[in-house]
Amino acid sequence: MKNIKAQLAIGLVCVVLGLVLALQFKTVQNNYLGGAAPAQKAQELAAELKKVREEKEALMSEVNALEGKIKEIEEAESKENVLVKNMSAELEKYKIISGLRKVKGPGVVVVVDDPPIDPEYSSDVSIIMYNYDLLLSLINKLNDAGAEAISINEQRYVSRTEISLAGSNVNINSVPTAPPFVIKAIGNPDTLESALNIRFGIVDQMKSERYNLQVSVKKQDEIIIPRYNEIIKFRYAKPVEDMEQ
Image (cartoon, rainbow, N blue to C red):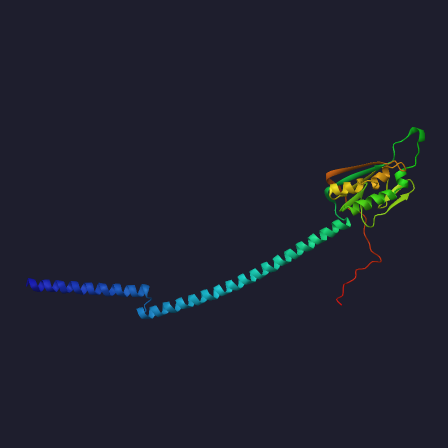
């Protein structure tokens, strides 16, 4: 009798365990496999993985294409920036050459004045004003010596600058000036000074008994020369385009 009861108890326990295991399996299948069989779910997951990989490859291709376009734009901008910088530097150079830029640098300062006043022979006549061609000769010597910028009494000297006697004044760029004349020149100070002070040169000529002018030449580490203030207009000269033969 005891054996039968024990067997019935064991059988009942086995039935309960079987029911519990079946319920747990069903729950796991519903929660983790979406109710589908393991093989079917594996196929679905593999298909989804393949789709995700394809989407990733497509996105990577798009990213690479965009990076290529960005690189092309950056290279184009870089070339454009170099071109603009080169053009700006070239334009700035020609502005300096034409006198349209205020400049500074080492050079010499030359002061030319009339002879000391002699009370016995006082005169209102200015020697240097009536011999202003000496100023032109001095400027030519500075240009020959490599002067990069020149001014006379704060008037920038350019190719269009006129120096002429007008009444009791010397006009420079149409501006009336009078002695003393202060000529500033930017360039190699030693070369400029040597060109002016050479024996029997322009300074000796100015200081000779014929003119007896007061002339001083001083080297300076920094000289500031103003820009040319007149408006440059060309009525007759026109550019010529070079044609290949």
